[in-house]
Length: 304
Image 1 (cartoon, helix red, strand yellow):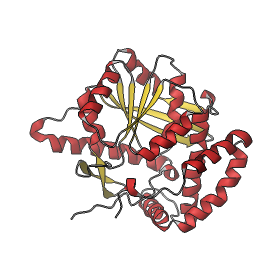
Image 2: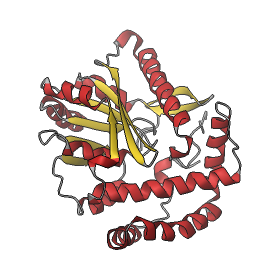
Image 3: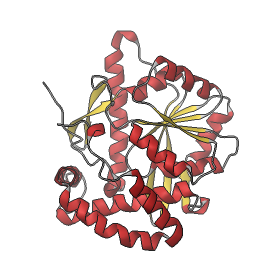
């Protein structure tokens, strides 16, 4: 069973560059016409991703009425393709503030006005890239997004060429080192946001995980995002950015005034917090089931 970071990417940087060029020159409608045959081929040829989609949808079906058949799986892939278009739109500046509705934004910004930054726990539900527009609302706000793979860094470097938003920084990390923690601590002290995905196991150390019940089955969640938040001694929020009624709805929800894991019961405390996060992630997954974009066996647990 491959780790998610080892799964071969079917799209290359040159291909992404081509899609971006088509989008900028011809618009969303033309690009979407190109994407349908591409998605159809990918859905038919990539059996592991298709099976992962169906497994997820069957788990969702246990909580909400839907027909978790092949057609819904295909729509799941189409939803991902549309999210890719919106990703390109967000980074190229084609999305305007009128395209995005925010919930809980004022409370989050109020925290930064106190002179201390905030750790924001993201996920692969919805389209986190749309959150870059948040920096347009407050010119003094700086946002740091942690990305886990070199492939993601190259992809984001490509998209960064289309944007002059210097208040958003992408930081590539395969693991959180002491140097990384010190650098992020400086950013929190400066009142900046640090956004990190909390729903994929670590790239380099698969042991730093906790089991949590998610959609009725046990899955592994990373401890790193929560340990980092505890080290930074700052408020913690979650963010979910979902496409709803033709617009993006960005939900910022308070998670903790500050995480603390006592040495005496450290693992139990982390487990409790991870389960809280998994519960919140499940709530939002049930809100927009087709916007969950983890096309691998998320519930695979190696007990060897």
